[in-house]
Length: 358
Image 1 (cartoon, rainbow, N blue to C red):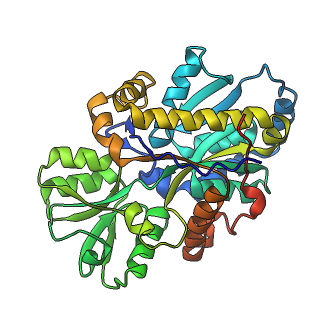
Image 2 (image 1 turned 60 degrees about the vertical axis):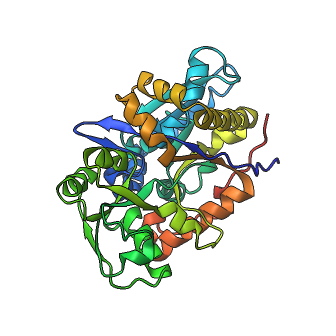
């Protein structure tokens, strides 16, 4: 099977949700991914078997692949393919749906209502374990979206957080695990983490006190900096992770497929992965057009914010052995912090699918 080695780092942004903007790394998506995955699988119960059987009877080449994504960077990477599909210009046939919360997408995947889904990386691992290996990951679609923000000009890297208080979200979940891992690896033992339930709370703190230090996901970073000119992005947690040179990557989102679909429609799945990669490439090459499409598909209401946040959200297309090495290393870090974060155990090799280009 062909192993795509070329990584396309694109940029993407987020979604206006209620009173605040929520990206792929926002509070609920980050803090409840693993538990939501387990709940989704349980709620499906016996219905998932019946739905899956019904889905299997509709796997001819005239049936569109049903793809679910989250509002935020994962969906941003798809908008160009979504537009091509809508215009009848895509090679494959697709039905796209966008949801606000990852548990909604996971539930539909488990029940057989979706064929592929773009999910938080640790939720994908939890679903794999819960469904006893009935899904597989075909690519990493989003790298890290967490950034350290402050008006304190002395903060440039993880080591500068020594003796400081840092506000963040996701206690007992991915943001905490990632931040504590980076602090440990950089020898910082006296950083105080103060957790808030929502990124909007932290944004308000920063608006009132620019000297405060926070770790936020995009697009909250862009929004916070727009409200207070003294705030600056101190450093990217993705860059800090990469500087450790451990072979893994800081991963936010992955694309998974039901294995019955992968087995019955391998060429179509491989073609989707190829077209998804092209969509991400277009996003980085034509930010203005992509931002307009983000608004058109209801992922974001403000095109200006989308354009500003795009360069800081990492949409990518990593597949094959490179995907496996990057993702398995990341999941291992989460597992060592708390096995429940990845569904109780690390996924085996069958979790990582290598597809062929059409």
